Image (cartoon, protein in one colour):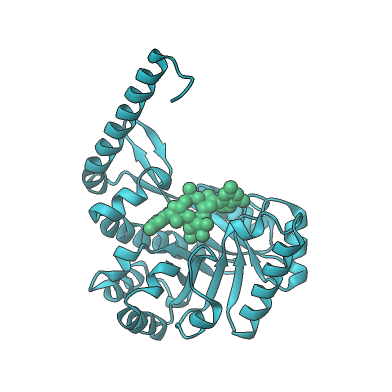
Length: 281
Ligand code: C2E
Ligand code: CA
Ligand code: CA
Ligand code: CA
């Protein structure tokens, strides 16, 4: 606060206090937000890098807050994880995402869409009946297990490995696939991951950002993609913003990508047209 006048310091303190009050308010409002169904989903396309067909979408939750407007997960997911409301929110996300995806498949049986990615928080995954929740969400949406890709974090598979592995196996036995989200931001290694029943690596945006400007970063991503391929893991590169990044990743043999270069997260009504437009004739 050096260089701030006394008035500046006081304003800074009251801004901080204000921000804290707002965060506390949001936290307590999460409970009623579930009951009032204030959550909505956007969907971000995941494309095949070689031909840019849209083969998947990731469901991303937003909170339609009655006073504060549309809030991104940044404003509430951590708090929801802490106070346990993420279990209810995540359950809703899973059911709604599968319902929506089944509707798209029914509308256009020839769609290039093959799967829907759903984020699962550690707390939600650790709920004793999580596998059963997935099974029943699939059944009530009339969705095939092959359509569902669950995105879990590295930290989940590092802790409590025995119980987590057992549940991952049960999910895979259903036909559901599992992705490690934000790969590279945690501490797991590829060789460790290979012992885990997972199918897909989502390579974090921070790895993609510098592949065109840093030879080291390019070499690192190239090595990860090659090793993942040898281990039969599919790779999705996150946060592709430039055409050159798509080309570089495609050349490395990375099969899938996601990012603003292709599309931002979209409202459900905008998905079918985009998918149809990206389909090669
Ligand atoms: P994530 O799973 O890594 O999702 C990708 C995030 O990166 C999304 O932010 C997406 O909008 C953003 N993104 C995608 N492409 C680009 C790009 O090219 N450039 C940049 N700068 N950003 C890009 P979003 O929707 O704000 O979500 C943030 C995080 O919130 C997600 O990160 C995920 O960890 C969490 N989240 C979202 N929905 C859910 C949910 O339903 N359940 C749980 N547990 N977490 C969720
Ligand atoms: Ca994700
Ligand atoms: Ca991610
Ligand atoms: Ca990320």
